[in-house]
Every structure is written in C-alpha cells, then in structure tokens.
Length: 312
Image (cartoon, rainbow, N blue to C red; front, side, top):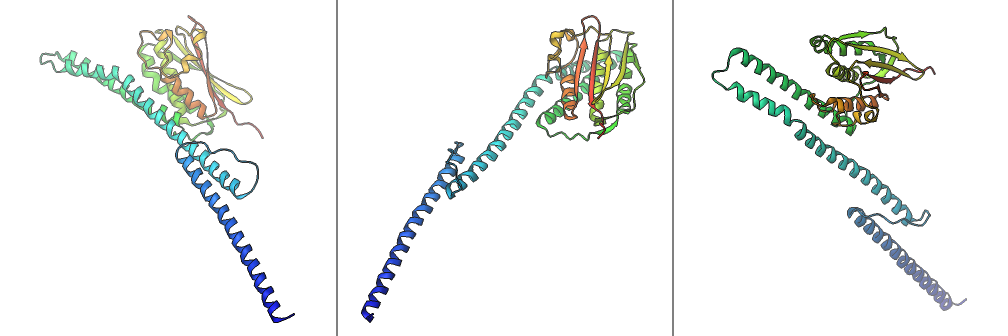
C-alpha cells in the first residue's frame, strides 16, 4: 500500500474517531444537561412543597436521582408534620392555660383586694390568707399538670419504667392523700397486695394513684370507705380503687378520660377535668391502661392495669 493511501486511511480513521467522539460528547452532554434540569426541577418542586411525580421502574440515573429526592421529600414531610404538631401543641397549651388559669387567678386577686381592707379582723385575715394559699397551691398543681400533659402528648416526657413492686408506689399515694381523707373522716383500707413486679415508673405512677384517690375523696360522702385491692392476671396486674361516691353513668365511661371533660357528678364541685386524662396518658406510656366500673348511686371502681413480667 502506498504511503498516500496509508495516510488517507489514517486521516479517515481519525475523522471517524473525532466524529464518534463529537457525537458521544454531544449525546452525553445532552443527557447530563437533562439530568441537571431534572435535579433543578425536583429541587424546585421540593422547595415549593409540591409532590415529585412518580417515575417508571428502573435503575437508570434519572430514576436513581428521583428516588433520592423522593426520600428527601418524605423525610422533609415527616419533619414538617412533627413541627406542625409541636406548633399545635404549643397553641393548644396556651389556650388551655388561658382558659384554665382564669378561676384561680381571679380568686387570688379577690383575696388580695379583701386583704387590703384596713379594718379587717385578724381571724378574717387569717381565713383569707389560708384561702389564697390554697388557691396558689391549686394554681401550681394546674400549671405542673398542664406542662406534664403537653410533654406526654408530644412524646418528650421521660419515664424510667421498669419491673418493680407497685406496693411502695401505692403507699406513697395513700400517705399524700390521708390529710384530705381525714378531714372528711373517710377511711382508706388496703387488702393484702401481691408483691408482683409491675412495669411502671414509680414517680409518674404515684401521680396516677394520687389523682384517683383525690377524686375518690372529693366525691365520696363523709365517713365512708375507700378500698384498694390488687389482682394479677396472665399479662397484667390490676390495682382497683373503689369508693362509695355518686357513681358514673355508663354513657360517660369513655368521656371521663378525655381532656377537660367533667362528668355529670362533678357539677358544683371544683376541678379542671385533667387528672383522669393525665393518668391515661401516663399509663399508655407504661404500656398499661385504666378502666372504670360504676353505677349511679353505687360508687365507682377505677382499675389501673400495668404489665407483669412474663416468663420466657
């Protein structure tokens, strides 16, 4: 083959290679530009809270990029929902505070005004000071309960639950309520408890029993008896608090555990409808629950169920 022919062949091969390279470069440049546009579109859709359209099944570059943005979109959506829940919880707490604090604050202001009277007798002054202190304690309890309620609803409350005896928890609750029971000459009796470990946080569960005992003392007539007993089943242990109060209609069983609900028997009695709702939230965090068995005119039995340690 002559030199001119070899040179011509080489030039043709070089031209073919350059043409192929140019075509390939243009093709891949167009392809990557298309991917870049898709990334920009996905990003714009994400920032504008739109929904990224579904792609066709496959593992090509576009679907891989789309899948990545869809995962980001879902994570962003979850975080946004959590932020909205927190916002709603804060707004709800503010509304609850403004509504529930009106009565104790109004009472405190009233007692302050009355205490300013220059000719107030000492015994009357002492009576007003005691009432103002009582309202202050109630205000403190209400604020504490509302903040605990908000933490439990948002899932930020820390419960250190473990399998431990519930007897000390019940005894502490009974001891804290005895002064109020003594004022109404109400007896509190406890049947022998089984020393079976139940899954609970003693500090938080004590508050459950205090709420139930306070309600029992509040609604039970004077010189009656509140009876505490315990039963153990296959998966749960149950602590029952039975009183001789006015009872609860069956149609109110589920509603009395709702936030701020007050039953028909609560008419004319002070309260905020928080205790039973807070108790329910606490027990749910401990994998337990609460139930009521009652009849109008025959008293009520509130049962607290907590998990027992099962054999493996």
